[in-house]
Length: 206
Image (cartoon, rainbow, N blue to C red; front, side):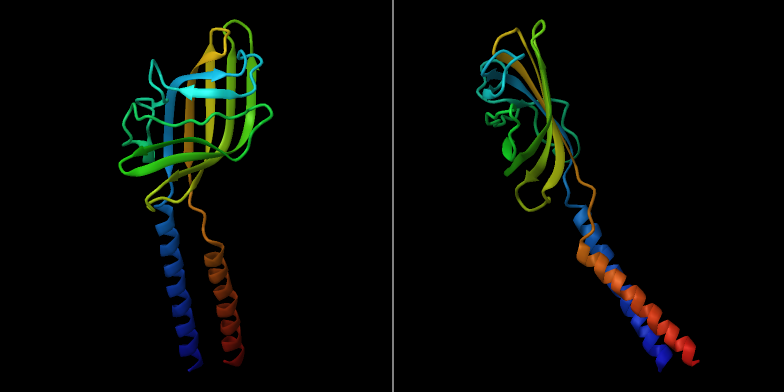
C-alpha cells in the first residue's frame, strides 16, 4: 500500500507537470514578435542640433500621418500593409519623457500600438544637415485578445537641412520569449521534495 501510494503521488505530480508545461506552451504562442518601421517628416522646436521635443510628426509628401514602411514588416507585423497610416503623438526627449504613447494604427479590425516607457539614448548634432538619434524601450500591444503585451525596443533617426523640419524614420522591434508563470514553477518545485520525502521513508521502513 505504501508503494502504491507513492506511485499514485508520483503519477499525480507527473500529471501536474504536464498541465503546467501545456500552460507555458500556450502562453508562448501569444507573444508578439517582429519588427516594423515607419517614415514621414516632423517639426521640432529647434534645429536638430539643439531640439528638445517634437512639435508634430506627419507623413511623407502631403500625407497627414506617418506610414508603415514597405518591406520593414516581419513576424507578427508581416501582414500589415505598407502605407498604413500611423499616429505618432508629439513628445519631449530632452529631458527624456517616460510612459508615453509612441505610435498606433488600425489594421484588420485590431489596434496595434506601442507604449514607450523610457528613452535610453539621445544623440544629436548640428553639423551639416544635422542629425538626431533617439532610442528607448516600451511595450507592444495588439487588441483582440490574441497576443499578450510584449516588451520591445524602438528608435527614431532624423536627418534634415539645418531647419526644424526634418525627415523622420522610426523602427520598432518587439521580441517576447515566454516567461513561465511563478505559480507554475512553485507548483513543480513543491512536488519534488514531497516525492523525495516519501521515497526516503518508504526505503527506511523496507
